[in-house]
Length: 215
Image 1 (tube, rainbow, N blue to C red):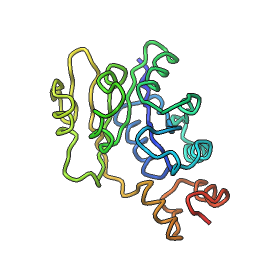
Image 2: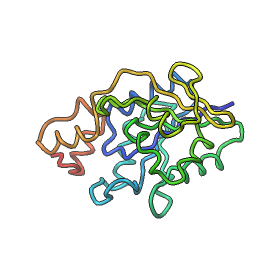
Image 3: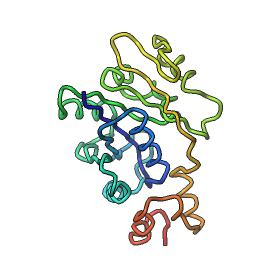
Image 4: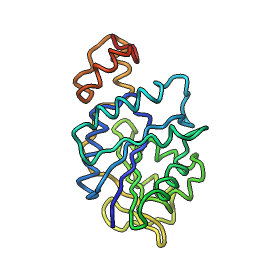
């Protein structure tokens, strides 16, 4: 059984915390490959405030260079309209081998709002969820969100929940990353250096294309 991870997000811009999450997922779940999937038109964000899709893809490609199990997917840029996760999961299930197990990485902040997502009740039929703790998300835990949004899921082991006939929900165990895309944008807006927060090649790309206030 091939194990494939799917890491969606705006990645505006991609930073070292994203790569740390990807490496932790590879290690803990024994993934064969992890796809980074930038959203072309995130339904929960103002598209006018987001860096154009081709630039975010280009920065992701720079970030994952030299990481053989990291792949950048432009699937959400090939569709018109909002980038709904249910459609992305359907695409991967259609286009991959039948003997593939999918793991969808999601931040705790997004997971806490999962009931607002399109056809959210069907998502766990397509992939297991791997929830990334966010240090800025207050005292809410993965367990409390599972209890509130997926009450028919029961604890199977520490940090793992299961429902008969469906996929699992995992809590990704890793040290919280102090980096966020909003932090990078704020620093850039103040004219501060961000090279220590971003993968090699990304700061130069931001400056070259004068993105997010970089100069």
